Amino acid sequence: MGGITHGANAARIRTPWWPLAATIAAGSVSVGLAAVNAFGLEPDSIALLLAGYLLGAIVATVFVSIHRALRNAHRGHPQFLPQPGLDRLAALGLGIGMAAGLTNAVLLALELSKQ
Image (cartoon, rainbow, N blue to C red; front, side, top):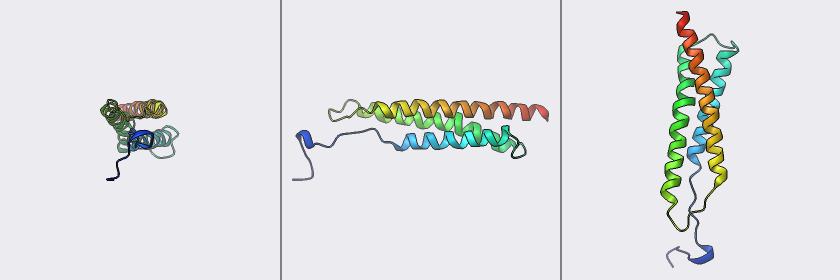
């Protein structure tokens, strides 16, 4: 039968989860780098602060944008299954990533002003 099913057993189209996993991973690493630098666990490193900023503010935003683009691409399909929980998770991951990225940016600016 070709593996195609119709009716109630038809495969539902969902938004992929991998962009959100990447968003949360990037945001978490950025939080860790901000904590390491803010609490003085490691000597302030411009490279670590820059990496924290890029991961939190830039990479997290890119992956949330990919998630939303994929969601919007599938939205017109009749078998699309909306997943509002993933959208909330995207907003949470973006908020955490942005906050951590901006924290790293402030710490980076402070470190650069010392030089």
